[in-house]
Length: 139
Image (cartoon, rainbow, N blue to C red; front, side, top):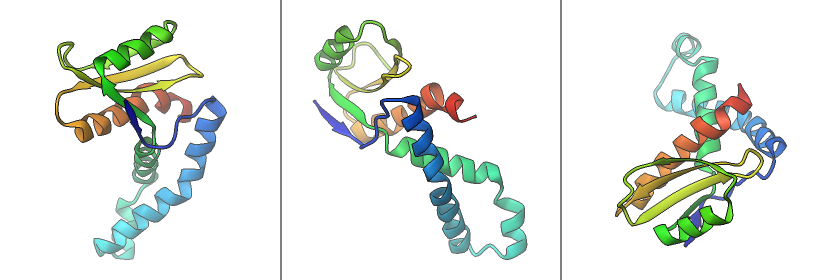
């Protein structure tokens, strides 16, 4: 078993704080992308909305989430050690490998099965984790 990513908030406050600190970074990323796309001031003002910056912030938050990756047995062991967690599992039960992210302060977790495409499973899981486990905290 191994992990990918570096952020696993232990508290709701830690998650909110991390999300708040990503606001300026998201604005900078969006501004740089718009510059690379050669937006003039009018196009920038029209197209770069608060929703665009918020989506960038969401993606930045999700991209750093710590994901555990391992064989199904390691996942089953972790899950058995945390029986109170509510789980959302995507994928096929018969696939041998798992990626998962758990949120201790809400006792919820998401997991995705995969056979070969670890990177794709991890990135899909990060989007699922943000949407299912964190989005409501920030709205």
